[in-house]
Image (cartoon, rainbow, N blue to C red; front, top):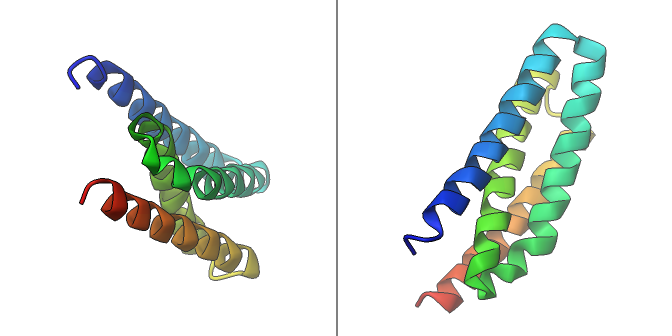
Length: 111
């Protein structure tokens, strides 16, 4: 586990950095920023849903979980800035499905 700590810190750092960059771009350029938020949010939501079953393999957890947190962060920001639009509802549904699948796999793997 000690050998994986730098990798885990790097992956979570990249996810936090992407979230901060996207939010800063959205603050200064409304039109381009909200398109970028939607693209990154959709990509994060779909990635986390597609990789949520990989919790069966402990290594893939470190690739799925940061993206799930990135998607949730951008969804909260998107709802705060744009309201509860259809796009945000769909993204929320995908992220909830990914979180439920992650939880089920986690409980099965680590019980």
